[in-house]
Image 1 (cartoon, helix red, strand yellow):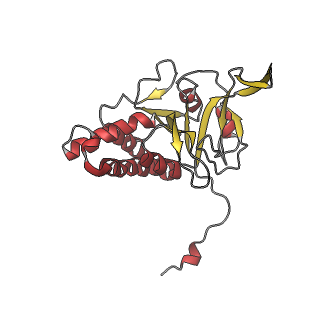
Image 2 (image 1 turned 60 degrees about the horizontal axis):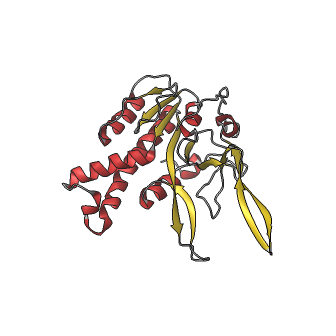
Image 3 (image 1 turned 45 degrees about the vertical axis):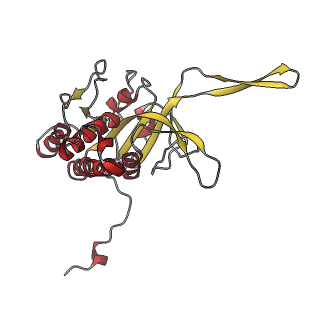
Length: 258
């Protein structure tokens, strides 16, 4: 029988990345993902009309998403990146599947908020499928989500608002933990303080519309990375891809989208 010490591995891993990009509507999240190497989109909302990319038909139910993942795992194809666009609409398909199996019309009809716990079974099924594509088919995984502002109860400070993915807290926690990178896309904003007289100061937000990605956790946002990324990057796939071990950075694209 082989000993565990005989199976010890060393060195850095070149396994493809699992990255979630979330942010405000229309900032260019889908376009960012479309610049990944040979992407195929599993679209759960109708937001790819102006983006030149390969995509599966719009799923009508949760099972259609699982079938797409299975097809990518079993069939021969040229794709190197799988994109789910978006997670928040995938979550609605998951909730509908939970309701179908439990015989209710709304997930809130399942007592004691257990419906959201039941939904985690389907989230894990999706993540297991994505892990299969990553580990066995060598595909990069990109997950797209919209953002929301929620109250965060920090036991060490006063409660404050922060940006998070627009998902139920159980699903969000699971996906964020699973991802290698959780990146927040937004517009860069600076503040200018002006003197209005009589000892009154006024702060004004200003910006030039520059689209950026925050890569690290701060009180104002959920984010993380395992690549020692700079705190801030341009919203450009190349800016991220240059830090990916063994990854190719495709040519820059100026496409804009959801």
